[in-house]
Length: 212
Image 1: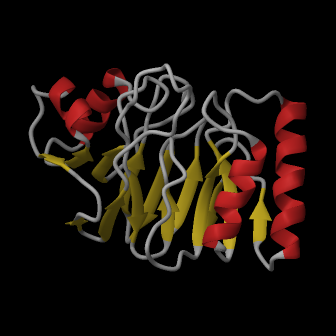
Image 2 (image 1 turned 90 degrees about the vertical axis):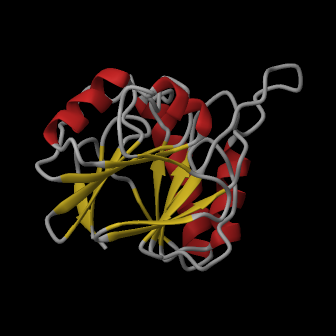
């Protein structure tokens, strides 16, 4: 599987020449619609994960694309077809991608702030992306996207999330709110704890792809 990272929370996974797009949001300015998108996952309704303009561009490339998301987002995409509303532990397929969705709630920003819904996704029993949550999958994970910035998290939570899952490989996502220096410090902390626990942590640059 090839994984390409764009700004903030947007990722493109490729298998057998087909692509799965995850969370193309408003901050993902360099995102390019792939050649053969067969599936789209939107974890929740916030604009840094959900940009209608990008979604329509993806659908125009492949009108038959399968879209997997939560109810809040599905209501906003009422004019599109092939939308599947997902819930915790639901399993779906979009060949060559098998998907298992985990969790129901966005992480808490503040006790007096509204609670939002969110889903994480496990792809091909290999790669896990939690959206805006620290929901744990119920199976071993080889590759983990670790959220590292946002009003709903702190570095210790990102570290604990990684150590609880203990993947073979981890890399940072949800990182657009960090300055270059901030990202360096956060990634250094993650790298230190990863190394102590036999996890490989990679700092993936914008637009960079890697194979797993």
